[in-house]
Image (tube, helix red, strand yellow):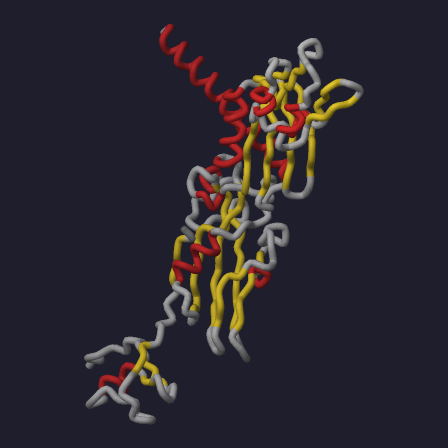
Length: 273
Length: 56
């Protein structure tokens, strides 16, 4: 198996992975979406709300606020020994919001949320939470916990996660008449003529539309997917770094596979007895 | 003797002048009218109850 990072920045990673089959690629994708934990507000205690926004609507909005997540310092609520409703310092982070429109009507933004842990704050400062008219106040306490997308979509740490087959374009120089029909038809302009040969410039950008195959009258070009090579495109919502997202997904997949083997072995032992 | 009507904590506010009317004052009124300006529309003020809401 080989992994090669094609592009990487703060929120996005694109990598090539070869030597795996499609069920493994799909499992990684599903785990990145629904099983990698992230920290999100789940309980809100409203102390005062004289705004026109209903408590439940505001709480729903707070639940959709992406928060920077520290996976190493916190545990999932179900794994925490505290057994308390609103959690403890090991499984929960408290954020507070106190805002008032004193002189004029104004919008309250996510930068006004104060967290007890400076590492767990909203990903963006510019998310509008609600609007207050003059004299209106909002005071609340929000409790964030680690959760998974499988429970509620607000816990999904990705804003996009997809994979596609890598393409293998094969050009037979013996059959090729250099008519350039394939070069003209390629919508991504990946083919070009050089030194009396048709060459592929960026194999990883090929969309496998097979237009070049159809355009070729002599069957000299073939666009086929590489069945064991995938290009993954993962975009984080900011809660975790994209690298950490992929590593966690891998860890969770491994744990699931190990759990499966353990359970099967226990079943077998049970049968033998 | 114990109070027949305990303090409910429900307050009303006149829509026109903003005067606060407590539940005791309200129960003594002959007709629903602001004691300050006489306006007949009163708004019930949100009680200071702490509410816990699930963020779903």
